[in-house]
Image (cartoon, rainbow, N blue to C red; front, top):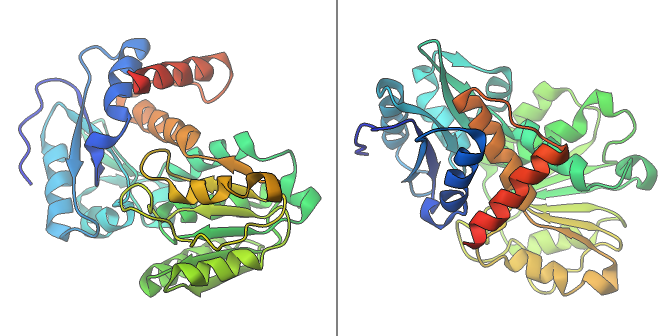
Length: 316
């Protein structure tokens, strides 16, 4: 990796296809709104499961460059943490628990590793789930993909403070047994009171079978990156979504096949369908607040204004 020293306060976006993200249009508009004078955003693209040396080079560059203030990490959160954790001066409790880096910031000369997904996923879920959804319906949760987002989502929904408003059962599937082993280890540390099943799903048909066995009102989440970082869906067109289910794709851009599959059944199955736009906003504003050391509202009129700015900028 080769980066030029930043000439103005810079936030990096470490991903796979960063130039295609709306954040490249949205960030300048947000920066103006938030008073972040001269702030810039720069994308750094790595292939999936890149060489650990590449992740270390990116972290080392940010660490030593004065005007490189931090980064948002997507897709590579777990791999970057595994490759570069020793380079951080501080690791926040969420990052240590979940073995991931979704945010890099600097404070008092220290390079800090954060996991912001538990916060942003919780804000997003609580924003679209009906009140006491799991408590009143006994709904199950199926997360397709065992990466950092699923770790954060399941952590949020396993919290003891939720009382009875937790899934009656959680199912996590992934093609990669290593990823499943890792989430099993992390869930063991959670000590959550929800039963979890882990399924090595080598095909979309295997995921179809799980979806077909879910009870009404279940929440089905595409946390694989399919539809954004790679084309396609973790399900086939033959899938049957649960009656009155909630379908959430963490993606908001790409071919979004998963969402198309749900929309074709929306009326017949009575589905509530959510894309990843609100998750995108919470995820980015949590990181921007940390990197630039400012307060950004997570709800109310202030958050609505930020959302409107993002929608307008993304269309432009």
